[in-house]
Length: 379
Ligand SMILES: Cc1cc2nc3c(=O)[nH]c(=O)nc-3n(C[C@H](O)[C@H](O)[C@H](O)COP(=O)(O)OP(=O)(O)OC[C@H]3O[C@@H](n4cnc5c(N)ncnc54)[C@H](O)[C@@H]3O)c2cc1C
Image 1 (spheres, helix red, strand yellow):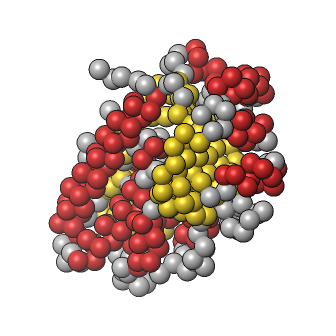
Image 2 (image 1 turned 90 degrees about the horizontal axis):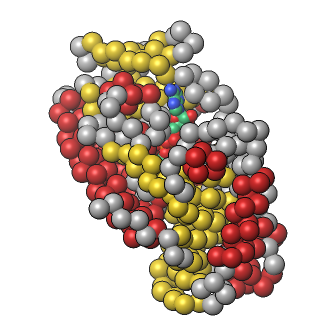
């Protein structure tokens, strides 16, 4: 026995692994419990690489080759005929879920990662938390981190009244190997983060590393997103019905979109999207779709149980900051617990105050941006 305090992390995606690596860096023994079996496979597409993620990597001493993403220099806005309406310099780096996941996972000893373990409930007693799992097992520690995403079971117990609210639009998404695109398009857009602002809809596309993390020309992928308004009720239900006719609650993974729905999207693209975006959509083999939602928790802490990442706050993707927020949750937690070794509850209370403010601010920014971009008024 090491005598180190023990943390149980629920959820082995980016939020959970960020928290696990940061806590290990300040001497905690950390166990991660993930519902899915084996390694998680590529989820979603691109992520804008923000400074907080790099800070969290540095804090945890995570080794990476410095090539975490693909750089873009300018943001450009296209019109419906592919003409550049506006160009502004805004250098940034785009990475992808799988690149970050690989680095974070490599930072953890494999025996600390427990796949196929579904958290069900927790109980607390005198500074110790016990987590119960669907397989009948239980684990105890001094801290339980709920990093189990927007449909968090940890949050369901802590704050049963809190649930995501549909924002009135969806993100159609796809990832395309750059070699599948016409050379002229590749030459024209490779240095840019590309937008097309429509009337009540928004398209964007940017380069991300290849599936294996490669950033060389020819090995990268284009990530595109088309935000479109979809009325709640039957219209949304149709979009979220998969190719087998099964309804889904909030998203369809790559490969599950009904062919008729994607054919309808392509027909709309021919009317509404610039030719560059049409080419990207036509070359996409496995599109996916996510309903955009807002989620705000009034608290993030219940004794020694806390909520991190999307489990606590879900800002809209226009903020490009959810992963950075999860990194900020993790880094702040580890630093405060390290400073307050003799009084962890004081550190946790400080953490909650700081991170509630960060989460609330980001959700508010996302709502304002989303409503403006999509032409939706909440008034
Ligand atoms: C359209 C779109 C674009 C986005 N673009 C960006 C971007 O540009 N930049 C950015 O930073 N972020 C972006 N994001 C968000 C980003 O993907 C997440 O915020 C980030 O990955 C943190 O997620 P998380 O780990 O908290 O939750 P999740 O990734 O949802 O992980 C939760 C994990 O918990 C597991 N789990 C769930 N329930 C249980 C249980 N009961 N027991 C055990 N395990 C459980 C799940 O299997 C999952 O692995 C985007 C999201 C969308 C929808």
